[in-house]
Image 1 (cartoon, one colour):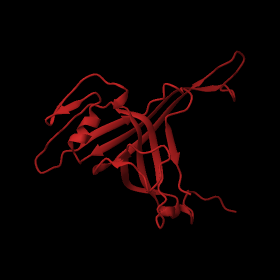
Image 2: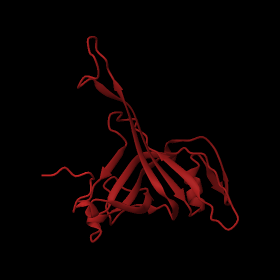
Image 3: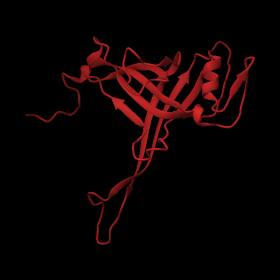
Length: 185
């Protein structure tokens, strides 16, 4: 068998995730297509799911380099950055943890446990399952929006707010990482 010089195969067209996807919040723990949660709204410029796991190398005396089994996860940071084009009062309240609205005037306050969003999911189209309703689902748990609220209005353009949802460990379980990827079946 000859060695190929690329990764393309006959299966490649059925193994891709395409388009920007849709973002839902207040999704249930047992997320399903029939019960996805609340749609965040229209986006422009795509969405980015990031999982940063800082892995520390432990160097025992006598080792001349990395040793199998001598690694440990020090930090897990899972985020979803959304370029939100659909701006509503409800979205603005979610984007500003601790905020509240009185007579449609939004003001800020301290963050409390009610400001955390149980689940935020990015639902994407997997080409191998396009004929079915089985999407790929990227989920963050116990989320807060902790990005700067920047609202730029330009001539002949739409305002897009970059929103960064950050997952948080549950205070009752510091071992279970606050993210999931559900691959379609």
